[in-house]
Image (cartoon, rainbow, N blue to C red):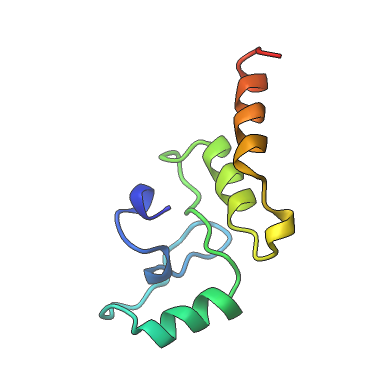
Length: 87
């Protein structure tokens, strides 16, 4: 997600419409960052045409807080093959 946005996703505050309500600030300290990762909902991509729905879905699945809910690398690979018509 950081590569897609060009900076840490924890620097943004997007609402449901994809509007950025972030306040300018410096980088987060390590304790602030850890607290945000553990206690806050997982970050999401902003809603806009720059990101295809498939990327949003992939990131939503991979950033689940509960590791049991995340796909394994094999799951992702098999899903990609199937989406391209391979069995």
